[in-house]
Image 1 (cartoon, protein in one colour):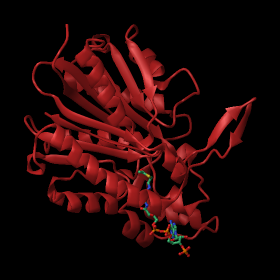
Image 2 (tube, helix red, strand yellow; image 1 turned 60 degrees about the vertical axis):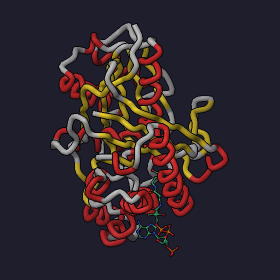
Image 3 (cartoon, helix red, strand yellow; image 1 turned 90 degrees about the vertical axis):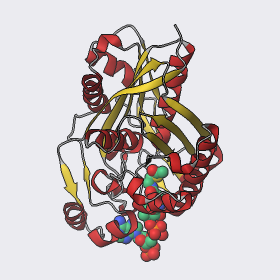
Length: 326
Ligand code: ACO
């Protein structure tokens, strides 16, 4: 059986309970001679706090819990799922995939399970792949998760990056339907910009090779992010034959409040229709969009019939958007 559309039938998310405020981070870094301030972080990024996973808490653990919550919201059992895709850049292992570990923990054996690696665009990529698989008949119901423990790949001596990120996971259940659904999707990458944002380390002959911490050219990322978030939003809406005014909620990747504001301004979307969580979650990479989505669904902002534009941008360089009707 094939379907014309896939629809979101449940959302879920989890944040590690340990909150690190800017003040706490400033004090911790200061004790090691690294100077920063709450004012600098808030002014340049809008971030006020982040959630940090305790040692031993992995992406698969966060993904499993977010997945469970999404399945509960959808009133489905793990056995109803025949596809799990986890978007992550901080997988538990080189292999098996984080998705296979989630499948085992959920007790959902049998369907397909794999990871998608598109950094902060990972959730949008994974969502589009799941939608295509459902519409082609390869799957009927999918769990799509963005999960990260970015705190593990940060150089806590680099004030230019360590203040920006947090940990967490968000998930959606997608089900085949003849009612829309995902209205349009656009995915892009330009590998020529791979060096502006990366964690260029690996495991080789039993040792870590390269540089196992995140590095970033912040200004280059900023400029590119604002430009592609604007263009991909327009492209996606054009594909759906809808005007910008038809967007009830925009959920851009939560990297930096200045990027969010600039994107909204360029698209003429009022800030009151942009879901913002970067102040309290910081940048959780592939988890940021589904975390923000779940928050806005649970607090009642996103309701049945709303058009939601989700936009990702990140390392690779990758970017993409999905327009979804609830
Ligand atoms: N505290 C205090 N000072 C700092 C800190 C800090 N945490 N970090 C950097 N600085 C200093 C720098 O050393 C520099 O000092 P100098 O002038 O004496 O050399 C000064 O602040 C300015 O540094 P810039 O890097 O030029 O600062 P900028 O205004 O560009 O802000 C930022 C940096 C916030 C990273 C900005 O470039 C940005 O938002 N970029 C977008 C990147 C982003 O959001 N990345 C997230 C991951 S990517 C993604 O998810 C798509």
